[in-house]
Image (cartoon, rainbow, N blue to C red):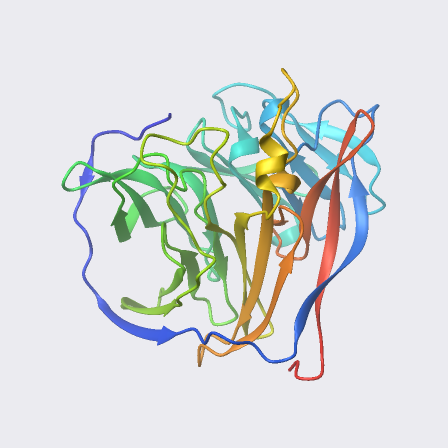
Length: 356
């Protein structure tokens, strides 16, 4: 396990507005339409399951995966591999493990690349030249959102709370990496739980939304009113956040976690990973050296919520382990075709008589 430094943060106390998310949705479902697949046997790397994908203004896709090391692959809008960028190192424009970080589109057609290994955000232009580097301080970063003003980021990750426990930390950084504000620290008493999940999204008002560990809840932070939070929370019988007390063995059911957020057209889209009904069969008699298909162990519940009222607009349980792309345009899942691992990207829409 990678741990952050021993710097301790106080837990922030701010005013908070709490809205309950309703339980029963109307007759409205989330529907996926496959748009494109990325990955081929001749590509110099894997798109793998649970890699990092984002679409840029040019229509090209960037793909990073932990099996590819420092290499970031570029695919055209047609899904064909075009080139690779990046190299391993600690210098400007070099990377360690962008596949466990996050890729986001940047203004002007470039990209922001979060690399937890070097603890920094790299800003690349559309021609892949280096525009800037933002160094992140003590926390181990997992996700980030550029501010609407263009003057910094909100970064989510893991550090230590003031009592020494690990906690989910959210910080406001300026473009140079200086911490302007520790937005929140949410201590957790188990190191394994939701370790690599800290999804965030920005809405049309410039607020940054983030999920909370071990809860079915999200909070919004507004740079214009940093001392007031908006919290949406709900009670879900299918949301089971805790792994077994003695660890997370392979034969245990997958825990529940909000692993993806998106804001579009005034609505929040929450993608929550839950245990597939057939997870026991999926882990039975594993083959040595062959990874278990994550889609057979996990399903994804996608709920669409009106953040102004908490009204549940739509809900669907989808038989895939799904992730949002960094641009928020697609949900994607792994597909194995023979010896080739591909990423299937889906556009999302609402369908039903009561959809808004």
